[in-house]
Image (cartoon, rainbow, N blue to C red; front, top):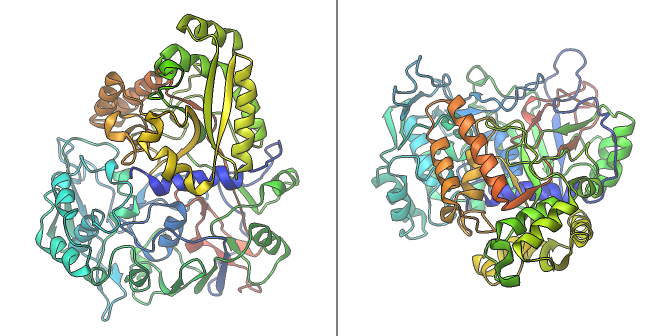
Length: 598
């Protein structure tokens, strides 16, 4: 699917962070950066992380969830990644396994923008026996593994048509038996023309078109190398998760799903090859069985076995007080998401296909009072307003607000469309206090414009898999409006990861994509294709801004907010720098106070 796990990561923000936030003022002293540090870095000790849930997959080429990325930070390296930069440049990729970022000047990008030649650092090693160099062949193997028939990577639509030969390779792989032997045979014997090992440490990517965002895309863990030992096990399996060799500073000693993870130092890791991870602590323990309230209590009270969160933030009810007292251990971080937003079912047969009418959709957009919704989600400090597709940190974002709250305008458009009165079905997760309150607020807002809204409550477990991911549910009119959420697959030059899965017509329809309202406009599709193939980032930015304006004019959805993500750490933790890709402080760069090392 186009973004199942990354979508779920964003959905977690709605379900956990915005449950019942009270309005509060921005007074956190660490917003978007990290903790202050005192004195020189201290090595050693055990970092204890507490969580209430698990990773999606302990598999670099398959994981597609922010908590999964947090886990991989410890033991898996990519060609490029995001640094833990206290100065805030933590959404700009840097070389990790690669020797440098490719440019046309250094020969890494061909003149036509379609060929990327990338060198892997000498000395980066697997913790095999004996330790050995990470190679270009390992990188090719890793990319091939994303298309496996057991559990393919959820973000494949981001690059399926970009890498030469990938669609055919993927189609062939889908027919392979789901056994380690059959998978290994296909990977070993089937070439992928767009990803080739030129020599032991040089990998060449060949694209179908120029893609200015490609180096940013290569930060995805899907593009991690995979050693030959990974082929002994089924992709995404628990057995593989406990046996996947490490090329990072730590190795997985033990993973008991939903219970615990233990990481210890990787003796094969060479610090001189890794400018991203300092690996100050000797060991990292993750306890995945702790409640959100208990985690916060332990972090605040100095419990020796509590240093960092793993998969949850502070309880929403406690955030206002933490912000009000300017707690230095609290951070409100960038998410680069649209979370939540209201999606309109353009294929609904209800009300004589009213939602297929542009004026009706525009009327709904004018009738929703964004300020009211943000207030029940916690106020604008945690939920700054987003009035168009792209959050401000994404290349191509241009501030527009095409639908300021205007009930009279909404009534006028409904009358012009021939629908002065409507009854719409609103799908929402009733277990989420934030979701329930947002639904109720929108219900009240729309009633003022003559629109009756009837709730369609859903359990969390059914929300996507039984409703939004099932096109027949949309086409049969099970729902007309719904809350949904989305987060960037990468950062910076990442507009494609919004438009391709959400607004690119038929290819983005679920279950492959996440265009839940089945929006399809030929001119929008053309703009997306043109922006994706733009030869320069500036040209791409201008085209993405046009695509943003076109989508907003067509009103297939109503954006609400690009929320902040709150994290908290114990006082003994130093250099806690928030990295948006993980939605967490980077554990590989923190150190513990000398007298409190776990």
